[in-house]
Amino acid sequence: MSEETDKLEIKISYLEGQLDELNGVIIDQEKSIALMERRIEALEKKVEDLIEVSGPARPQRKPPHY
Image 1 (cartoon, rainbow, N blue to C red):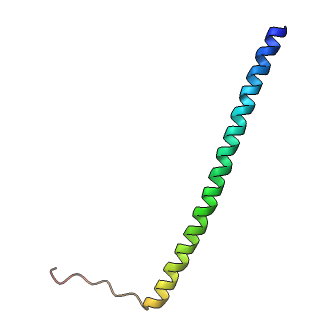
Image 2 (image 1 turned 180 degrees about the vertical axis):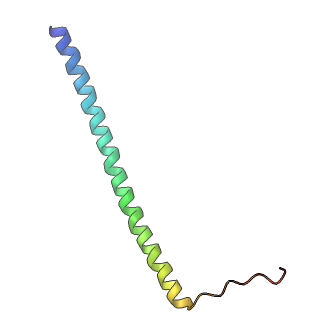
């Protein structure tokens, strides 16, 4: 019985280590996603500003060689 208990304790210890490692990965990914979302929002704002500054869109015309 003691040998089985020892094996279970070793497995639990290993799984706890894996869980801590995966938790760290998830935390890092959450930070990366938050940073990317902020960057996307900044880029969207820049695009909106450029559209406002450039005025109305040019009509779609075929190049002269068509």
